[in-house]
Length: 266
Image (cartoon, rainbow, N blue to C red; front, side, top):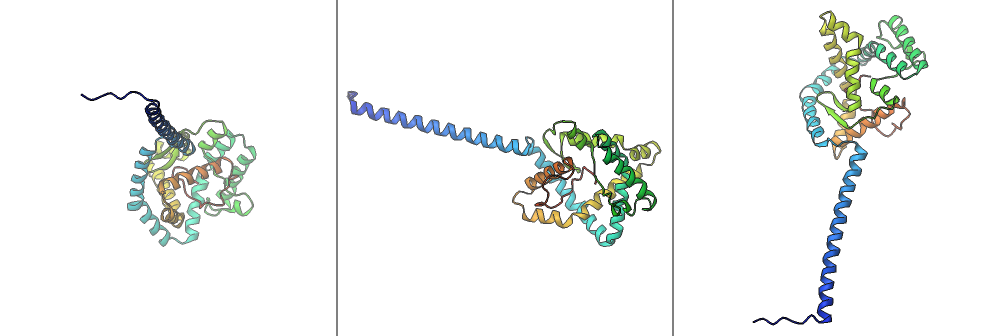
């Protein structure tokens, strides 16, 4: 029969030491877990991307579409059309967006900005040959992109979580609603739909996508080549560029390439 040793002071101190060590390990592990959770929460808050797994899946789907279709088309577009022709197309697309830019300037309470939109449209539609030449910019009235997302931001509407939309790309809940609102409010799209001329909308959207992609071929290739996490880099660039638009270009954009946001025309 095994003998039970008496609980001597030395033995009791040993047991207490073991219990203290076990408790310390438990507290340390719990603290480390809490720190990990805090770090993950802090990262989620800073990126505003709680839907990241889903967004990454859509992002790589879009990358596949870009690799197979959009990027090759943009390369051919840039190779075939000289710079002046591409600039003229870009000017026309901006001129066609004047009604939306004007509405957003007014909704934001920017009367001088609204006046500039009207001046640009009149000058470029007449002297600028239907917008082919940006004569207004040469006269000191540069183009200023305004969107419903910017208007919502000025009104104090929260941006909501970051989203990656199929084909359209980087967005947010607020930006997605703004894009949908502009689609239904755009007079050119409404005219095309109501007169069975939907080819106008398709042609305009296709030209915008290809022209914008061609403009940023080198910049996007450079970001993709030098990014440790291409998805995270594009998310950061989208948010910085959008914040710059909301502040009318007052954000610090000097340390970043100008990356397109495919769901927001410029």
